[in-house]
Image (tube, rainbow, N blue to C red; front, side, top):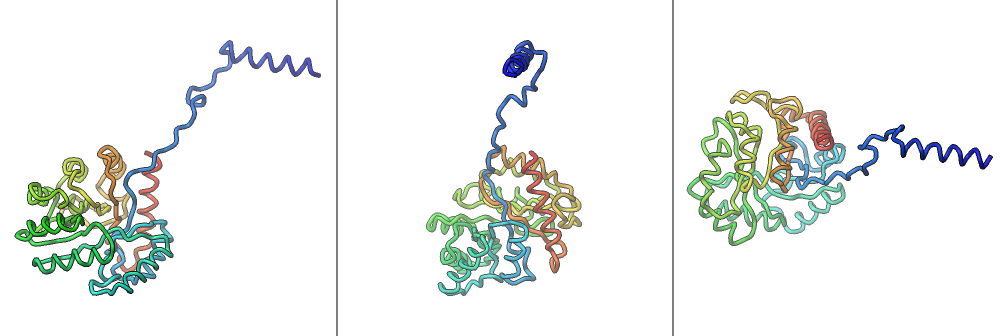
Amino acid sequence: MNNRREFVKKGVVGLMAGSLVSVPESFARPLKEKKEDLFKLAMAGYSFVHFNLDQSLVMMKKTDVHYLCIKDFHLPYASTAEQITAFHEKLKESGVTGYAVGPIYAKSPKEIDNSFDYAKRVGVKLIVGIPSHEDLPYVAQKVKETGIRYAIHIHGPGDKLYPNAVTVYNLIKDLDPGLGICFDMGHDTRYGNDAIADLEKYQKRIFDIHLKNVTAATKEGTTCELGRGVIDIPLFVKTLRKIKYSGMCSLEYEKDMKDPLAGIAESVGYYKGVCQAS
């Protein structure tokens, strides 16, 4: 019996050595562990405009998203220190971290001061905001004084202040580098711009991304499920990796806003599938 085992063993070794049995090279190499992306998936608070905080956190838990850009309808600007602490505790219980506040409209230096005070009290280092053009130097001054970055949100065609990434960049390029862009890729596309090209072109000043897709690259285009629109999401993710983007991709889902869970779940699933497959 031992002789038979030895014979079989030597025969297999001989076949391998003689290349009569070939092993694919991909099998022979150890599998490489997939690197974790520098950017993270988040939710833009506006997606939950019709829901209270508890309801919103339930949807985030169901879709396995753990970062939130905080809107004032969940945490009012006049919140006390105790209310802010309770808010963060509630987020923590659901495995969620608030990473920024906004978007916040600010039409005067006083309102800009209030925005920075709010962000400081909430304990975040990023404001998504919409200030007046003439107040941009003041915003830059506040960024420098506080160390809190400020990302200007774009709103697409029809918006007179910040319709696209090009407009924002041209207004801020000579100001403090802590003043940047909240890159709403859907609105940029609706304006007629190439969102992927703009992502790469203005990468150094893009601090936050509103992740979405739209039905058309026109003013009439509307938000849709992430995998169903005109923006090439796999290429967008590839570009995020290429530029080493390390901020948040906040899904802003503006379709079926009174019943958004199915669309959010589909979009999150599609996004995670793209990230895993590419």
